[in-house]
Image (cartoon, rainbow, N blue to C red; front, side):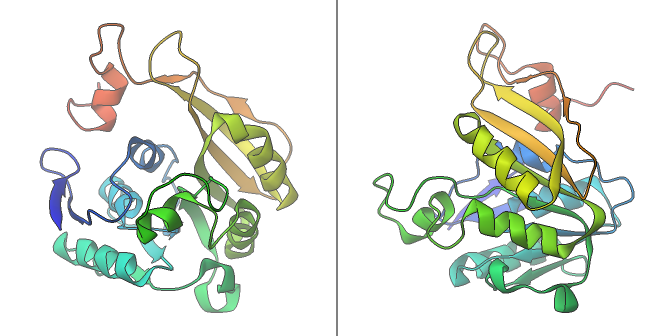
Length: 240
């Protein structure tokens, strides 16, 4: 295991060398949804718990249920929750998200997920944990959307990150699960580059109409981090 600090003075994590590494997509998604009015949230396919740690750092009152199918990853997430003193607000469930029912989990105000999006068998990564994180071996986007819709209260929000090349599939699938896309933000490495991923926020049973926000640019032309990237990674303070 390796130790990783999310930002100076921020949450610390154990990271398994065999698991999906801490990635930019998860960090960006962790800062994307508003937490106003959110007291109960869920992280579906939580992995080592990075999304939930970021959300918990943004709100001192939100309670988050982390759902992870892989036993080793769930155990790692539990250790990361405990090492940051968040076990009173964050609960890890070693469960298959497809089997969760409203009666046992309750209604959530917000659900987040950084889902796998490669077809089963795509790529050549030999590690079992990474295959589960990257490929739709244990959960498809359709199954994830159905689970999120079932567990959200009416008007609740679902936020996810998805590759731009498969954006049409995501929007059709989400709408079909009664999760109406309301915010869309594309992420670009640099100005002039094609966007790579999309941050999407949906509302359960929401009215049609999506707000397309300005693109999130990660790097300046000289390769340094943009001001927004530095604020996301807590490398500089938000302007008052």
